[in-house]
Length: 141
Image (tube, rainbow, N blue to C red; front, side, top):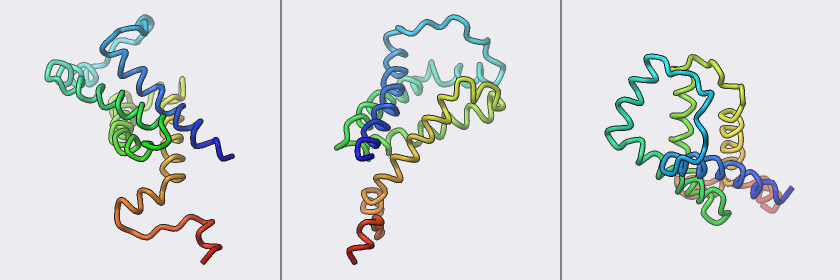
């Protein structure tokens, strides 16, 4: 049970690092991808030439590596959190949920991130300046 956060961190960090690096190195084949609908095409037409997508992909690589390392996991979650929300919004609003669960990588990544935020909630509470005690700390009080 004590190794579960480490496993979840690696499982969350590796896809972000891999897909972020793929943007720059193109090592994942793109065959079999459905053609984008009009909204997706407009979004990519705005993000790619502006350099915005490059910045997001760099943050994905950095955040993925930070999450995979236990000592820097909270910082990585802070980097990947907004990216994960935007990925989820993309699938919900632009694709209308089609393919969100096949393969279920987005819901799995969201669940892993929420689990890691829960495990490291004391660190986030300290960052936000609130008092948050783990259940084991409550027994000692």
